[in-house]
Image 1 (spheres, rainbow, N blue to C red):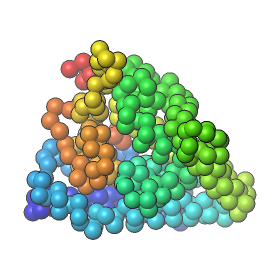
Image 2: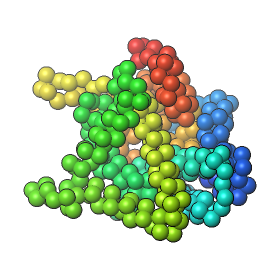
Image 3: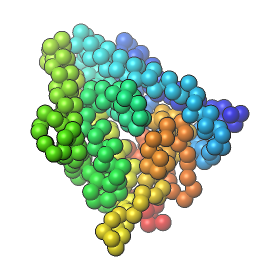
Length: 343
Protein backbone atom coordinates (compact mmCIF):
# COMPACT_ATOMS: atom_id res chain seq x y z
CA UNK A 1 0.00 0.00 0.00
CA UNK A 2 2.96 2.34 -0.52
CA UNK A 3 1.23 4.12 -3.37
CA UNK A 4 -1.64 6.44 -2.56
CA UNK A 5 -0.55 7.15 1.01
CA UNK A 6 -3.22 9.84 1.04
CA UNK A 7 -5.99 7.28 0.41
CA UNK A 8 -7.04 6.50 4.02
CA UNK A 9 -6.68 10.17 4.96
CA UNK A 10 -9.20 11.19 2.30
CA UNK A 11 -11.94 9.33 4.17
CA UNK A 12 -11.44 11.59 7.18
CA UNK A 13 -12.98 14.44 5.17
CA UNK A 14 -16.50 13.83 6.59
CA UNK A 15 -15.09 14.39 10.08
CA UNK A 16 -13.70 17.75 8.98
CA UNK A 17 -17.25 18.71 8.06
CA UNK A 18 -18.53 17.47 11.44
CA UNK A 19 -15.88 19.51 13.29
CA UNK A 20 -16.96 22.60 11.36
CA UNK A 21 -20.59 21.92 12.31
CA UNK A 22 -19.89 21.39 16.02
CA UNK A 23 -17.73 24.52 16.13
CA UNK A 24 -20.37 26.66 14.40
CA UNK A 25 -23.01 25.65 16.98
CA UNK A 26 -21.14 27.43 19.73
CA UNK A 27 -19.61 30.28 17.74
CA UNK A 28 -23.01 31.13 16.17
CA UNK A 29 -23.43 34.18 13.92
CA UNK A 30 -21.91 33.90 10.46
CA UNK A 31 -20.00 30.77 11.49
CA UNK A 32 -23.26 28.82 11.04
CA UNK A 33 -22.63 29.10 7.30
CA UNK A 34 -19.21 27.41 7.49
CA UNK A 35 -20.61 23.98 6.55
CA UNK A 36 -22.45 25.20 3.40
CA UNK A 37 -19.40 27.23 2.37
CA UNK A 38 -17.15 24.24 2.96
CA UNK A 39 -19.45 21.94 0.96
CA UNK A 40 -20.12 24.12 -2.08
CA UNK A 41 -17.18 26.53 -2.24
CA UNK A 42 -14.15 25.05 -0.53
CA UNK A 43 -14.64 21.43 -1.65
CA UNK A 44 -14.84 22.34 -5.39
CA UNK A 45 -11.73 24.53 -5.01
CA UNK A 46 -9.79 21.77 -3.24
CA UNK A 47 -10.93 19.32 -5.93
CA UNK A 48 -9.36 21.55 -8.56
CA UNK A 49 -6.11 21.89 -6.61
CA UNK A 50 -5.74 18.24 -5.51
CA UNK A 51 -7.05 16.83 -8.78
CA UNK A 52 -8.29 13.39 -9.80
CA UNK A 53 -7.24 9.81 -9.19
CA UNK A 54 -7.64 7.66 -12.29
CA UNK A 55 -5.83 4.61 -10.97
CA UNK A 56 -6.84 1.49 -9.08
CA UNK A 57 -5.08 -0.76 -6.59
CA UNK A 58 -4.08 -4.33 -7.38
CA UNK A 59 -6.46 -7.18 -6.48
CA UNK A 60 -4.19 -8.22 -3.59
CA UNK A 61 -4.25 -4.66 -2.24
CA UNK A 62 -8.04 -4.58 -2.41
CA UNK A 63 -8.15 -7.82 -0.40
CA UNK A 64 -6.10 -6.10 2.31
CA UNK A 65 -8.30 -3.00 2.17
CA UNK A 66 -11.44 -5.05 2.66
CA UNK A 67 -10.05 -6.58 5.87
CA UNK A 68 -8.59 -3.33 7.23
CA UNK A 69 -10.16 -2.37 10.58
CA UNK A 70 -9.69 1.34 9.88
CA UNK A 71 -12.14 1.25 6.97
CA UNK A 72 -14.50 -1.02 8.87
CA UNK A 73 -14.59 1.17 11.96
CA UNK A 74 -14.74 4.56 10.25
CA UNK A 75 -18.45 4.36 9.23
CA UNK A 76 -19.43 3.54 12.82
CA UNK A 77 -17.57 6.56 14.17
CA UNK A 78 -19.27 8.64 11.51
CA UNK A 79 -22.65 7.13 12.46
CA UNK A 80 -22.24 8.30 16.06
CA UNK A 81 -20.96 11.72 14.99
CA UNK A 82 -23.91 12.37 12.66
CA UNK A 83 -26.63 11.35 15.13
CA UNK A 84 -24.92 13.35 17.89
CA UNK A 85 -24.82 16.38 15.56
CA UNK A 86 -28.56 16.10 14.95
CA UNK A 87 -29.58 15.84 18.60
CA UNK A 88 -27.06 18.44 19.78
CA UNK A 89 -27.99 20.80 16.94
CA UNK A 90 -31.71 20.73 17.73
CA UNK A 91 -31.03 20.93 21.48
CA UNK A 92 -28.90 24.07 21.02
CA UNK A 93 -31.50 25.51 18.65
CA UNK A 94 -34.33 24.95 21.16
CA UNK A 95 -32.37 26.27 24.13
CA UNK A 96 -30.81 29.31 22.48
CA UNK A 97 -31.93 32.46 20.76
CA UNK A 98 -31.27 32.55 17.03
CA UNK A 99 -31.91 35.30 14.51
CA UNK A 100 -33.55 34.39 11.19
CA UNK A 101 -30.11 34.62 9.57
CA UNK A 102 -28.64 32.22 12.14
CA UNK A 103 -31.62 29.86 11.98
CA UNK A 104 -31.29 29.46 8.21
CA UNK A 105 -27.56 28.77 8.57
CA UNK A 106 -28.11 26.21 11.34
CA UNK A 107 -30.88 24.31 9.55
CA UNK A 108 -28.98 24.35 6.23
CA UNK A 109 -25.83 23.06 7.96
CA UNK A 110 -27.77 20.37 9.81
CA UNK A 111 -29.42 19.25 6.57
CA UNK A 112 -25.99 18.93 4.95
CA UNK A 113 -24.78 16.79 7.86
CA UNK A 114 -27.83 14.50 8.01
CA UNK A 115 -28.33 14.45 4.24
CA UNK A 116 -24.94 14.89 2.60
CA UNK A 117 -23.19 12.73 5.18
CA UNK A 118 -26.01 10.83 6.91
CA UNK A 119 -28.01 9.50 3.98
CA UNK A 120 -24.81 8.76 2.12
CA UNK A 121 -23.59 6.73 5.10
CA UNK A 122 -26.99 5.01 5.30
CA UNK A 123 -26.57 4.10 1.63
CA UNK A 124 -23.20 2.51 2.38
CA UNK A 125 -24.38 0.64 5.48
CA UNK A 126 -27.61 -0.45 3.78
CA UNK A 127 -25.65 -2.43 1.21
CA UNK A 128 -23.77 -4.42 3.84
CA UNK A 129 -25.04 -7.92 4.63
CA UNK A 130 -24.97 -7.69 8.42
CA UNK A 131 -28.19 -6.93 10.29
CA UNK A 132 -26.39 -4.44 12.52
CA UNK A 133 -25.23 -2.35 9.55
CA UNK A 134 -28.63 -2.47 7.87
CA UNK A 135 -30.30 -1.53 11.16
CA UNK A 136 -27.97 1.48 11.50
CA UNK A 137 -28.84 2.53 7.94
CA UNK A 138 -32.54 2.49 8.77
CA UNK A 139 -31.97 4.48 11.98
CA UNK A 140 -30.20 7.21 10.01
CA UNK A 141 -32.94 7.30 7.37
CA UNK A 142 -35.73 7.37 9.97
CA UNK A 143 -34.08 10.51 11.41
CA UNK A 144 -34.67 12.32 8.12
CA UNK A 145 -38.16 10.92 7.47
CA UNK A 146 -36.93 8.92 4.47
CA UNK A 147 -36.95 5.28 5.55
CA UNK A 148 -38.51 4.30 2.22
CA UNK A 149 -35.12 4.92 0.59
CA UNK A 150 -33.78 1.77 2.27
CA UNK A 151 -36.41 -0.44 0.63
CA UNK A 152 -36.72 1.22 -2.76
CA UNK A 153 -33.00 1.72 -3.32
CA UNK A 154 -32.00 -1.88 -2.61
CA UNK A 155 -35.00 -3.67 -4.11
CA UNK A 156 -36.02 -1.23 -6.84
CA UNK A 157 -33.36 1.23 -7.93
CA UNK A 158 -30.55 -1.27 -8.48
CA UNK A 159 -32.85 -3.41 -10.59
CA UNK A 160 -34.54 -0.64 -12.60
CA UNK A 161 -31.81 2.01 -12.79
CA UNK A 162 -31.70 4.03 -16.02
CA UNK A 163 -35.11 2.79 -17.15
CA UNK A 164 -38.54 4.48 -17.07
CA UNK A 165 -39.45 2.10 -14.22
CA UNK A 166 -37.00 3.78 -11.85
CA UNK A 167 -38.29 6.89 -10.02
CA UNK A 168 -34.73 7.77 -8.96
CA UNK A 169 -33.29 8.01 -12.50
CA UNK A 170 -33.63 11.45 -14.09
CA UNK A 171 -34.53 11.61 -17.76
CA UNK A 172 -32.98 13.51 -20.63
CA UNK A 173 -34.12 17.15 -20.68
CA UNK A 174 -35.96 16.72 -17.36
CA UNK A 175 -35.22 19.59 -14.96
CA UNK A 176 -34.57 18.89 -11.32
CA UNK A 177 -37.77 20.77 -10.49
CA UNK A 178 -39.77 18.22 -12.50
CA UNK A 179 -37.73 15.31 -11.22
CA UNK A 180 -38.06 16.15 -7.51
CA UNK A 181 -41.84 15.70 -7.05
CA UNK A 182 -41.83 12.71 -9.41
CA UNK A 183 -39.12 10.91 -7.46
CA UNK A 184 -40.66 11.72 -4.06
CA UNK A 185 -44.01 10.21 -5.01
CA UNK A 186 -42.52 7.38 -7.09
CA UNK A 187 -40.01 6.36 -4.42
CA UNK A 188 -42.69 6.07 -1.73
CA UNK A 189 -45.09 4.16 -3.99
CA UNK A 190 -42.35 1.78 -5.11
CA UNK A 191 -41.04 1.28 -1.55
CA UNK A 192 -44.54 0.59 -0.25
CA UNK A 193 -45.25 -1.97 -2.98
CA UNK A 194 -41.90 -3.68 -2.33
CA UNK A 195 -42.04 -3.46 1.45
CA UNK A 196 -44.62 -6.09 2.39
CA UNK A 197 -43.33 -8.81 4.70
CA UNK A 198 -46.03 -11.13 3.37
CA UNK A 199 -46.97 -10.61 -0.27
CA UNK A 200 -49.85 -13.06 -0.06
CA UNK A 201 -51.52 -11.06 2.68
CA UNK A 202 -50.79 -7.38 1.99
CA UNK A 203 -51.75 -5.63 5.22
CA UNK A 204 -50.77 -2.01 5.93
CA UNK A 205 -49.09 -2.74 9.27
CA UNK A 206 -47.14 -5.64 7.77
CA UNK A 207 -45.19 -3.32 5.53
CA UNK A 208 -41.58 -2.28 6.08
CA UNK A 209 -42.16 1.19 4.65
CA UNK A 210 -45.11 1.73 6.99
CA UNK A 211 -42.96 0.64 9.94
CA UNK A 212 -40.12 3.05 9.10
CA UNK A 213 -42.58 5.90 8.55
CA UNK A 214 -44.03 5.20 12.00
CA UNK A 215 -40.53 5.30 13.51
CA UNK A 216 -39.98 8.72 11.92
CA UNK A 217 -43.28 9.94 13.37
CA UNK A 218 -42.20 8.75 16.83
CA UNK A 219 -38.89 10.61 16.47
CA UNK A 220 -40.78 13.74 15.37
CA UNK A 221 -43.02 13.43 18.46
CA UNK A 222 -39.91 13.08 20.64
CA UNK A 223 -38.45 16.34 19.33
CA UNK A 224 -41.83 18.04 19.70
CA UNK A 225 -42.25 16.81 23.29
CA UNK A 226 -38.82 17.91 24.46
CA UNK A 227 -38.29 20.92 22.21
CA UNK A 228 -41.80 22.17 21.55
CA UNK A 229 -42.68 23.72 18.23
CA UNK A 230 -39.04 24.75 17.65
CA UNK A 231 -37.91 21.16 18.11
CA UNK A 232 -40.52 19.83 15.69
CA UNK A 233 -39.83 22.49 13.05
CA UNK A 234 -36.09 21.96 13.39
CA UNK A 235 -36.48 18.22 12.85
CA UNK A 236 -38.86 18.60 9.89
CA UNK A 237 -36.75 21.33 8.26
CA UNK A 238 -33.50 19.37 8.40
CA UNK A 239 -35.36 16.31 7.13
CA UNK A 240 -36.65 18.20 4.10
CA UNK A 241 -33.21 19.60 3.30
CA UNK A 242 -31.57 16.18 3.73
CA UNK A 243 -34.08 14.63 1.31
CA UNK A 244 -33.63 17.52 -1.13
CA UNK A 245 -29.85 17.04 -1.13
CA UNK A 246 -30.21 13.29 -1.65
CA UNK A 247 -32.51 13.73 -4.61
CA UNK A 248 -30.24 16.32 -6.22
CA UNK A 249 -27.47 13.71 -6.06
CA UNK A 250 -29.84 11.10 -7.49
CA UNK A 251 -30.63 13.54 -10.31
CA UNK A 252 -26.93 13.92 -11.09
CA UNK A 253 -25.99 10.24 -10.90
CA UNK A 254 -27.96 8.87 -13.87
CA UNK A 255 -29.19 11.91 -15.80
CA UNK A 256 -30.09 11.11 -19.41
CA UNK A 257 -28.48 7.65 -19.37
CA UNK A 258 -30.83 4.95 -20.61
CA UNK A 259 -30.66 1.17 -20.82
CA UNK A 260 -31.88 -0.22 -24.12
CA UNK A 261 -34.83 -2.58 -24.23
CA UNK A 262 -34.07 -5.92 -25.88
CA UNK A 263 -36.46 -7.59 -28.39
CA UNK A 264 -37.52 -9.87 -25.53
CA UNK A 265 -38.93 -6.84 -23.71
CA UNK A 266 -36.26 -6.92 -21.02
CA UNK A 267 -33.77 -4.13 -20.50
CA UNK A 268 -30.10 -4.69 -21.12
CA UNK A 269 -27.85 -5.47 -18.17
CA UNK A 270 -26.64 -2.51 -16.13
CA UNK A 271 -23.34 -1.36 -17.58
CA UNK A 272 -20.66 1.07 -16.34
CA UNK A 273 -21.88 3.66 -18.87
CA UNK A 274 -25.26 3.91 -17.13
CA UNK A 275 -23.89 6.07 -14.28
CA UNK A 276 -22.13 9.43 -14.10
CA UNK A 277 -18.77 9.32 -12.35
CA UNK A 278 -16.18 11.70 -10.98
CA UNK A 279 -12.68 10.83 -9.84
CA UNK A 280 -11.90 13.98 -7.87
CA UNK A 281 -9.97 12.87 -4.79
CA UNK A 282 -11.25 15.25 -2.12
CA UNK A 283 -14.98 15.07 -2.84
CA UNK A 284 -14.73 11.30 -3.30
CA UNK A 285 -13.26 11.02 0.19
CA UNK A 286 -16.01 13.24 1.56
CA UNK A 287 -18.71 11.07 -0.06
CA UNK A 288 -17.10 7.68 0.69
CA UNK A 289 -16.33 7.05 -2.98
CA UNK A 290 -19.96 7.56 -4.03
CA UNK A 291 -18.70 9.24 -7.20
CA UNK A 292 -17.32 5.91 -8.41
CA UNK A 293 -20.92 5.10 -9.10
CA UNK A 294 -20.53 2.74 -12.04
CA UNK A 295 -18.55 0.29 -9.96
CA UNK A 296 -21.12 0.53 -7.17
CA UNK A 297 -23.90 -0.53 -9.55
CA UNK A 298 -21.78 -3.34 -10.94
CA UNK A 299 -20.87 -4.62 -7.45
CA UNK A 300 -23.47 -3.29 -5.00
CA UNK A 301 -22.02 -5.10 -1.97
CA UNK A 302 -18.46 -3.88 -2.61
CA UNK A 303 -17.37 -1.69 0.37
CA UNK A 304 -16.66 1.99 -0.24
CA UNK A 305 -12.87 1.66 0.09
CA UNK A 306 -12.79 -0.96 -2.68
CA UNK A 307 -14.73 0.89 -5.37
CA UNK A 308 -12.77 1.19 -8.61
CA UNK A 309 -12.65 3.67 -11.43
CA UNK A 310 -13.43 2.49 -14.98
CA UNK A 311 -12.18 3.57 -18.39
CA UNK A 312 -14.76 4.82 -20.85
CA UNK A 313 -17.50 5.63 -18.34
CA UNK A 314 -19.39 8.96 -18.39
CA UNK A 315 -17.26 11.44 -16.46
CA UNK A 316 -18.60 14.71 -15.06
CA UNK A 317 -16.50 17.85 -15.44
CA UNK A 318 -16.58 18.45 -11.67
CA UNK A 319 -17.35 16.56 -8.48
CA UNK A 320 -20.88 15.94 -7.26
CA UNK A 321 -20.98 19.05 -4.98
CA UNK A 322 -20.40 21.37 -7.95
CA UNK A 323 -22.78 19.43 -10.17
CA UNK A 324 -25.48 19.69 -7.49
CA UNK A 325 -25.33 23.48 -7.77
CA UNK A 326 -25.53 23.31 -11.57
CA UNK A 327 -28.55 21.00 -11.33
CA UNK A 328 -30.50 23.87 -9.76
CA UNK A 329 -29.99 25.95 -12.91
CA UNK A 330 -31.42 23.95 -15.85
CA UNK A 331 -29.85 26.08 -18.61
CA UNK A 332 -26.37 25.80 -17.07
CA UNK A 333 -26.89 22.08 -16.46
CA UNK A 334 -27.83 21.41 -20.08
CA UNK A 335 -24.96 23.58 -21.31
CA UNK A 336 -22.33 21.48 -19.53
CA UNK A 337 -23.91 18.00 -19.50
CA UNK A 338 -25.68 17.64 -22.84
CA UNK A 339 -22.49 17.89 -24.93
CA UNK A 340 -21.05 15.07 -22.80
CA UNK A 341 -24.15 12.96 -23.43
CA UNK A 342 -23.93 13.52 -27.17
CA UNK A 343 -20.26 12.51 -27.23
